[in-house]
Amino acid sequence: MAEQSSATEQQQEPERTVPGRQVARRGGGGSAADLLRSDRGTTSLGNAVVTKVAAIAAREIGGVHDLGGGVARAVGGVTGRVGRGTEATRGVSVEVGSKQAAVDLSLVVEYGVSIPEVTEAVRDNVIKRIEGITGLEVTEVNISVNDLYFPGDDTGESRVE
Amino acid sequence: MRVGVPAPSVRVRLAQVALGAALSVDGVAGAGQGNRFAAAVVVDGVPLAGVSVIALPHGIYELGLALIARPVALHALADRVRERVTVAAGVADLGERLGPINIVFEDIADPAMVQVA
Image (spheres, helix red, strand yellow):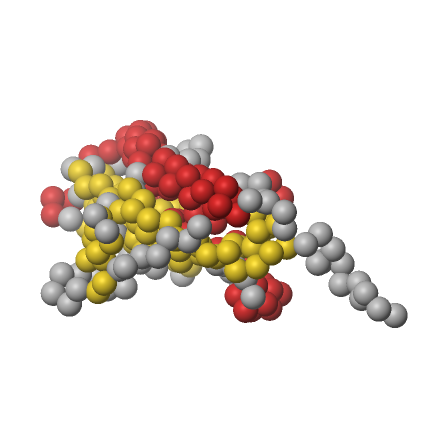
């Protein structure tokens, strides 16, 4: 089930506050998070990295038909056809800090599966993958199920003659 | 009098050696755009994508590598890239010129795309 975040913006501290946790924000739009500094150099991650990992992790779970939903899927379909699409990361938004990340996901779930079980499995897998691959701590994964997929939805067949 | 193509500078050689070494590391899927870098390395009028080399004092160069990775542990991958680049620079007799190696992972290669490719 979707967790409702009570995130509040703080004007003085550039940090995202969630219950019990904080995501330190980067300044200047936050295109990448500096993760590790050493004498041998720094290692940084672009936001696209966390976004893509979250998308891949969500799709790995059985019962997840697609990411996005409604308008996002329609727009995504068009952008995918006209060129540089965002097909792979549609329905995923992330906020990446220096050590933590927060993820928002929109899912289309197959009809008949247990939505609580699927969303919990998605949440667990997204956390496991992001933490394993990027080393960032995932503070929250908010999931909204925007649509259900019925077998036959893609055929476009009319029910009437 | 023989007129030849001038030898590439240390900066260009370092960029080429480092990029080649980085792309050969298992887990690296390709070079990124390097848009975050302040300076690009241009060879024959063409910018080398994904690499930046900036001179530091004492003849040392700071290296920036923008990479697209496969979905693997990125910290460990960054360490492997640094090791490979360091070795390659040594082989090319550029080891003394190599300073910090800053690595930016710009994106992850989608496994589905990789399989198709």
